[in-house]
Length: 337
Ligand code: ADP
Image 1 (cartoon, protein in one colour):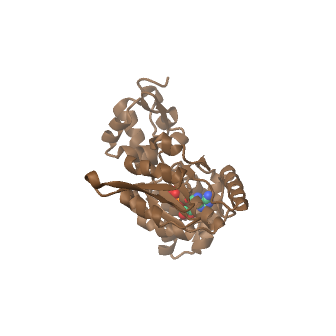
Image 2 (image 1 turned 135 degrees about the horizontal axis):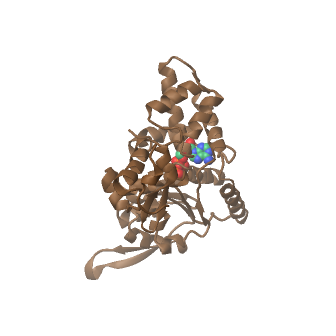
Image 3 (image 1 turned 120 degrees about the vertical axis):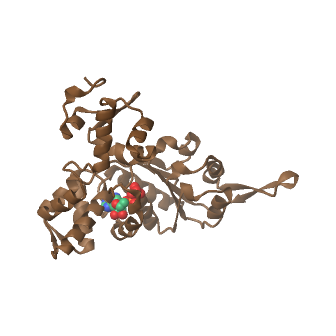
């Protein structure tokens, strides 16, 4: 099972909650976003108003949900958590909205998966805090308008391009892109997590895990946990560099953090499509992966690390990809000369 696999979700959820930063100081990195949010919060508090609606976007595991929880902590606000696919019917949204109290934060994860009908109900709710509900059917149907308490929506998405532009424009508090972390930041996150999990880890191991964590806190925490398991069966209470390397090898994570699926994707672009360009749909079919998974989970890191480039005609494997797989770049047929 790959580390990016969604089957990790359950396991992750409890891990996420244990390790989730509870203050701005514990939330490492993303300095500019933190600075902006702190100002937003202070200004709103001074005015005695709820903060304006916020949108966070970026690849999974970078800390969007954590930010939403941190903000509600700062504001002493209650946070109600839901997600795009969980709101199936207009009635679902109506019941969520009408159950909000003044000052509450509504967090909608995977906002790009909200259906269009729901989005349309959401616009007036965000803009003028009113909810239009149709009661009854046919000629006797009538619309009633409910007033909602002042609340803040925080939405998170991995796919901002899929959000309709009217919805995007409703986030008056700002739209923030979370970026990958630096290796140094990931090392700090690992050190903090190890302390919370009550396991000793040496510098070599911290560096090895950081190097292979896809610059992503969630992945770093997962890897740390796997190393802890390995240490435990080895009857050791210290994760050494050597033990970390053995664990990472067992997980088939290579020195630059690629896992088997990443390598399979690169291999497919190179072997089956002469290095590309190849369309996402075709690539998905060739690797038996979901198109969305490639786009949301694998590709951002492959691009960030310079293994893949996205061109108008499709995905292209770079020289670095060829070299990493031990292939001859001169083999490539077309695009990148
Ligand atoms: P997302 O919502 O973007 O998928 P999460 O907010 O659920 O990501 O973060 C995943 C896990 O990574 C969290 O439980 C937390 O432990 C860790 N994490 C994320 N961002 C940070 C950070 N800036 N500092 C420390 N830990 C973090």
